[in-house]
Image (cartoon, rainbow, N blue to C red; front, top):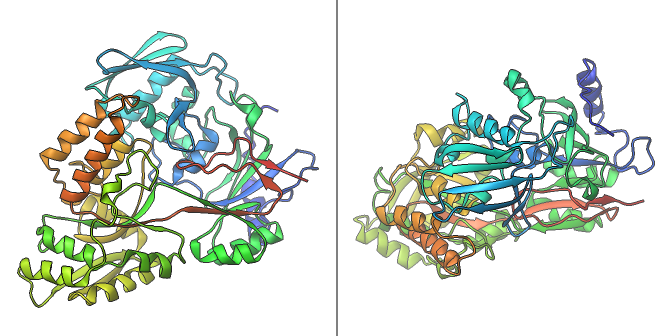
Amino acid sequence: MTPRNRLAPFAALTVAALALTGCATASSGSTGSDTGTSLTWGWRLPTSWDPVTSIAGWDTHALALVYDGLTQLDPAGEPVPGLAETWEYNEEGTAVTFHLREDATFSDGSPVTSESVRLNIERGQNQENSTLAGQLRIVTGVEEIDAHTVTVHLDQTDYQVPYLFAGKTGFIVNPAAFDDVESLATQPAGAGPFALTEYVPNAHAALEKNDEYWDADRIFIDELDVVPVADDTTAVAGITSGQWDVSIIPASQAQAAENAGLDVEEIKALTVRALDVDSTVAPFDDQRVLQAISHATDRQALVDAIYFGHGTPNWQPFPDGYVAYNEDLDDLYPHDIPAAKALLSEAGHPDGIDISLMLAEDDTALAELLQAQWAEAGIRVTLNVQSASAASQNYVQRTYPLVLDSYSGRQSPLQALEVLYGPEGLMNLGRQTPDALTEAIDIARATPTDDPEYAQRLQDAVAIGVELQPNTFLFSWPRILIHDDRITGIQHWLDVQRWEDVKVEG
């Protein structure tokens, strides 16, 4: 089966009609249909099918269906071969040479070559509306050694590139589409496990197996539909009725899924609830105030009440077990109301303090619980509820100095630290970075990932960021998928949810 572009003019009407009747796909979960095994995934559709213009970190899950990176991340978050079979650094760590698979092709059958890689990196660097330019700033040039060997030259010693190229930054688009790059927003052209055949924004994406994919022997799904779950409370009923075969659910629905006899996959992920803080704005320019807020926070109570016990109190941006996780930060600021009051008094606020917390509408319950907890320490909070779009704009406009937020990690742990703490990091509202943190990040970046000292140097940088920077982390929470027992082989991927080895039985 060679994927075809079947974006027919009547597709929108057909899919819209199906969506309105609550039927995502006529052959959902069927193994006896004319087209083979199919699966419907209750998930989210991307903001763009073009990795260069996609604006949401969550998009990577859908984009990975149609694109492959030079590398991939294994379930533990470590880089493994993708379109590149092997790679090696030069002695200085300032250039990395990738050896492409000679059998790697795009879904139209054309080969993935060194030129493809060069053109993609250059587009990511130079296209006016690129969201990847910041990550690719480290690249000073791309050299085509031969048709399947390409060297990426860097502006400094950086052993994180194989991590970086496992995500959107390394997704390789078919250069044949570059004559009309705007079309990529709805018509992706990649070398991933699937190819898009129908797409209706906000409603439906139909994909079919890409037999040209280099690892196609591990893909057992012939047709995969992605259909958003508009109402989280309908996910369990949608699985039991066959509307979806696999679905993402919030923690609030996990018990209902278990009661319905469904399999619940609780997958550790690089997601953490956090407070974004602008430390250039009073009173958050006093570290004692931030420490008081942290001591006034009962993290376990947040997990129990809002996430129904599905989560882990956390004081850092990474989950337990991940290479960057620093166990010395466990319980860094335990729930301690007297300690919080004492810190406020030392900071010149013996009678407490009045602050405003900005949040999106979906976070009202969590914010109200924080408000009640902090009140016990004399931290009086006004909740400022904004639209999701206004909350997103704060990364750039920095209108609000204290924001209830979520953070999803990046493929590279050091890239994650730069997003949180770097001078241009979106979640670094004050845009200030201590010299000690910059130095620690650079030391970790310049350490080969197979060096015995790598993990410790990385964790040292995490500790400096957590202790010196204002961002306050609350708890990590898992990705929760549900399905019935016909679905087998789902692996627990720390990063992007992949479909290798997943089967639909009977």
